[in-house]
Structure formats: C-alpha cells, structure tokens
Image (tube, rainbow, N blue to C red):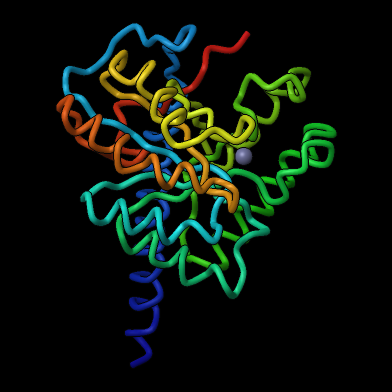
Length: 255
Ligand SMILES: [Zn+2]
C-alpha cells in the first residue's frame, strides 16, 4: 500500500501536467490565428472558397433571446452571442444554458455596457471584461474565447490604450471580434425590412461574413428580420458557423 501512494501521486501529477499542456497549446493556436490580422477597410486579402456566414448577436441575453433561438433551431443555424454580464441572472440563466446546448457560441461583450464607466481607462475596460468573463464562467461553466468591444475595436474611447487592453486580454486567452456586415439594428429604430436591406447591401461581398445583429429587449424588428436574413444566405449557398470555426477571427485593421 505504501508503495502505491507515490505512484498514484506521480500519475495524478502527469495527468494534470498533460491537461495543462493541452490547454495551453489549444489556446496558443487560437491566439496565433487571432493575431494574424489581414483585414483592411473591411475587405480581407484572402478569402476561403467555402461560403460560411457567421451571425453574431450583441447585448443579450434578453426577453427576445428565446425567440431568436427558436428561429435558429428551426433553420438548423448556429450563431455567436456576445453577452452582457449583468443581464445573466436567475431568470436568464436557463436561456443561456439552452443557447449553449443548441450549439451556439458565447463570448463576452461587457459587464455593464456603460461607456463612461467601462472606457474610463485601460484598467476599467480590462476589469469590466474580467467581470463579464467571471459571470459567464460562474453561470455556464464555459470560459469564453472571444470578446467584442461595445462599438467595435476602432471606437474612439479606447484609442489611447487600445493596444494595451488587447495585449492584456490576449494574455488571458481572449481575442476580440469585429464584424464586416451590419444590420444597423441598434441605430435608431429600424423596421425589419430596413435591417434586411442593411444586411443585403453587403452580404455577398464576403465568403465569410461576420454579421452584427442585436439581442436586446428593444430589438423586436431584428427577430422579425432574422428568418429572411438566414434564407438570403442559404439561397446564396452559404453554410453557417460559430465564430471560432471561422478561418480566422475577424478584426479590423487598427493603426
Ligand atoms: Zn453592445
């Protein structure tokens, strides 16, 4: 018995080290890809031939998330949701659980989404994302790989310290994701036909479009527009995927 204990401890140590190695290798591959930015003015230099659409929803979970999930499920489509941490609570936890169970991906958007608070300085934004990440992990058991800056990575608030926060969050295994097609559904109160037209204006430019839509309580028109947006891409020969399945993460070229 006495001899077995050191062997047991040794085995556990080896298993633990292997899992750490695997985690780090997986993370490194992902961030290497993420750093390989070749997007310029919204047009990527190289595009894979296979056409895959990446629908993304910011600002959820909300009272509309289940309706969005029903539409996605009905159409066999998976999407990516960039969540607001302080909207994950006892009421919305089951919705987020379904979202994951359905095969959708989650990313961190922000904890509070209050521009003055989150973008006060580099530490404020870093802490906000860390708080969002912690909430996501506590409520779902999933560590998000991606985050999305409110107003995108080129927003004016973060210009002086953009590089610093991108670097600090990359060290945590987090990559940011922008978009190249927008439904413009958080600008004013567009009706469904306008959101469809906004997507249509750019939808076939890219073989791997990353489409920005919103999932806040006020985005009823987005829910109405979603079936047609999906049909539009299907008819044009696109499959659908979640953001980590893209050939590389989509990031705007920054100065
Ligand atoms: Zn947002």
